[in-house]
Amino acid sequence: MKVSASDDDPVSAQYEAYPYPARDPAEESRRLVTGSPSRLLEIRHYLFAGGPLPQNFRALMAGGGTGDGTVMLAQQLADAGRNDAEVVYLDLSRASRATCEARVQRRGLTNVSFHSGAIEDLAGLDLGTFDYIDCCGVLHHLCDPAAGLRSLADALKPLGGLGVMVYGRFGRSGVYELQGALRGLGKGMDLPARVQLAKSLLPALPKTNLFVRNPILGDHKRSDAELVDLLLHERDIAYSVPELAAMTATVGLEIAAWIEPLRYDPATYLPPNLHDRLEGMSQLERAELAEQLAGNLKTHTLYLSLRTRTVAESRTTAVPTWVEWDGTAVAAMLRREGALAGGFDGLPLRLDVPARAAAFAELCDGRRSLAEIETALQERFRDLPLPRLRSEIAVCLRVFGGVNRLLLLEQP
Ligand SMILES: C[S@@+](CC[C@H](N)C(=O)[O-])C[C@H]1O[C@@H](n2cnc3c(N)ncnc32)[C@H](O)[C@@H]1O
Image (cartoon, rainbow, N blue to C red; front, top):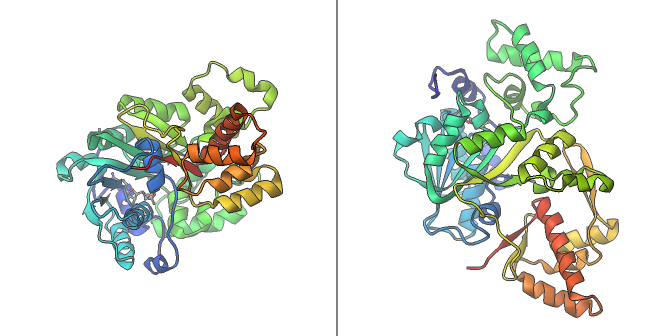
């Protein structure tokens, strides 16, 4: 079986012609693209129990593309003053690498090294071993994704972990049928001609078409590169939760977390009178059920480790830290709405929070520990019994952590 991509591989040629995602390096002066996996806070919370990253931290961006993850992590490491840390970029596509290099240069970052090559050939590339490996949107394009994942796991240091994103089976309903139709219609045409073909077909699709009926798929509207990636890809497969879990298990990796955790909790979708049906279910069974119920998980992002128990726990010393949210703004929203209001991929959600959640949110300033927050709340709500206060704090951590916005860090 062919397990390694080469220059004549259609996937390789595709990313040479349409680097993904389409990015203009000039935009680096205006904004930093952020997301999961690979935010620095997430790596610490999910893979290093909230503790500091190891000395001389080394991260591999495997299939780094045009550089969203690379630029984010390199910038966050630089902002954190981690001058000892190194980000290693690897991709088959030279065109994608050129864009990433330009973005990194634009920001004046000096902590990234660039390499061209295939994930499957990692062992022979002499890049060393890594504390963290990002592989976002890549494994599902390989000839043999399990072999690719194994190659990455083999390059981890013993305490290291991975942040992975692969396509989700149910959330992409309609994609594969439309890919098939476009393959048939575009037979014999080159890729740019097939892009034009897709553009003329899309507005004319019958409203009963499964892709048209899936409202959460809109990437193709952003750029030609995104359209190619979604609808004209040379090789892509999607995973259900159990399929993905089976692949990670064969490689000997533990699942530390599914992102966002709350989306993989069936209680998010079930009416309260059915919650007792969840008793006795394993984490994996719960995640499988959540995926079946939600139907809108078009990707799966997860953190994987060679170890167990890598996720930060709610110790009294832990410092709850907002991820790109501000405690004051969260508190204002909770007071206004009486719940955490938002949604994921077409599904609006109103998440119930305890009475003292707004006060808790304001106290989470990235400096106070849980013990200090508890003391401050006790002083403010003197009549509230301590067990009640503690259970409210636990619910706050579950809800805000469940949407991946409040993570726990341990100070060094
Ligand atoms: C969908 S893009 C994802 C890019 C980036 N990780 C992101 O999330 O923005 C997939 C990338 O994987 C690269 N790729 C595909 N197969 C690869 C392989 N076998 N080894 C290394 N890179 C590969 C492609 O060239 C492309 O840049």
